[in-house]
Length: 93
Image 1: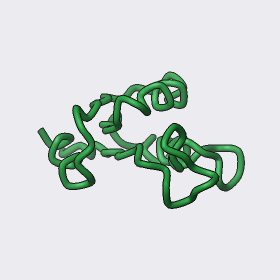
Image 2: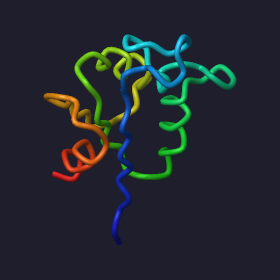
Image 3: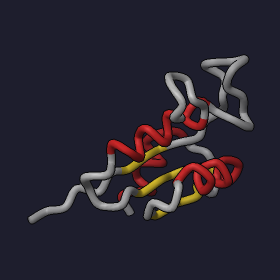
């Protein structure tokens, strides 16, 4: 049976929800609705599947590690931000 491996792309420049989100704290790591952050809510939705692959930038690695809450995950730190397609390709490798 094929196992589903979720891929979570998180990070960003923090400009779309400015001034709430910033480059140092983009929207995935903010609690916009309720007490959970968007990233934490996404992790919770991944629970029925295999441990997720998380692609993030070096600037956001500490947020990812802090919000993982002991869950298993493979974390890939992008060497340089190249947008969504490159992050997906990196996760696929």
